[in-house]
Image (tube, rainbow, N blue to C red; front, side, top):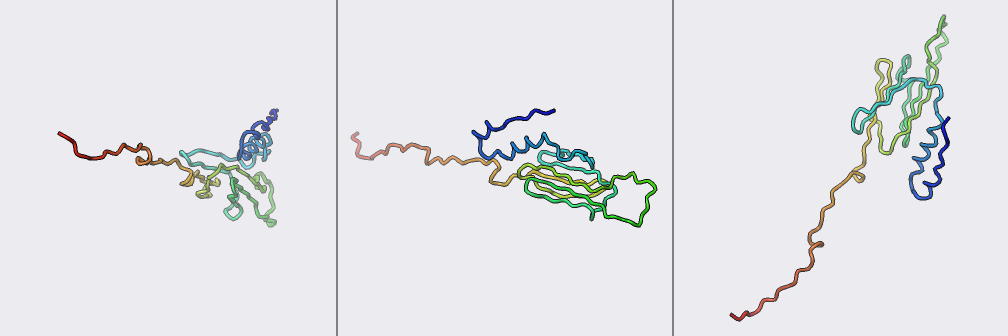
Length: 156
């Protein structure tokens, strides 16, 4: 049993972290208790990720992938084929819905269906204004005003 954590002290001294606290609170409550269909989440590079979902028996037109703000939603629904009479029906082809929380600036690069796996490639792309940049130091502002020399006749 997980203990409930009170994040209220953090709310008093932080601004804009509501999403993180909500993620932590919701982590204690599993969204998909049956864990079907099975899936993997892999980090394949510095800022690249891959979600692979086992969707054997589903075709491309029976799967939908939606990228909402900070959320990846994958749904699958098999069309009913009443013409088939099963003598044994052991394949789990029931409808499903998976939701994956995405960090800020994570985009979906593409998806493909191969060998019964739905593979979704994700990449974290920071906007240019959020990337570190070097600030030039203006030398004219940093120099103190040098004393001016007045030329005059120098007795020799």
